[in-house]
Image (cartoon, rainbow, N blue to C red; front, side, top):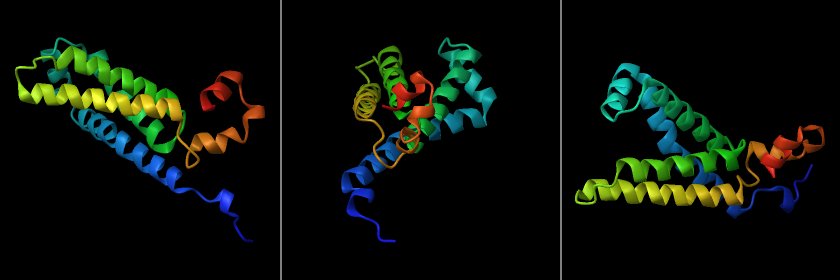
Length: 149
């Protein structure tokens, strides 16, 4: 059977997939790194004045939302969560602008948040689980249908 041109991914869809994978990489890597050594993670968070439950929530957010973006499953929600996380990280932990390193981290967090806001507005594109599920929307709960739109 011959595939028609409209069913093949366009260049924009491939670029959107590449962008999603690149955006998710930093969160998946950091989440797995934190999860790999929980004792060290709890110590680091304690030095920042944060509790173990906050550390666990951070790991869950980074891995869960990172996978959401990479796979394109509820990616708008995952991107919005990580955009807000990046803004919070920038404004809570990287405000010593006398340090060039801190300024760089602040700007990096703002840039990533910007990319996540764009992704939350645009959606995952046609190469995504969201796109596959959208075909089944008549059998879905209304909140899930809205999240996939």
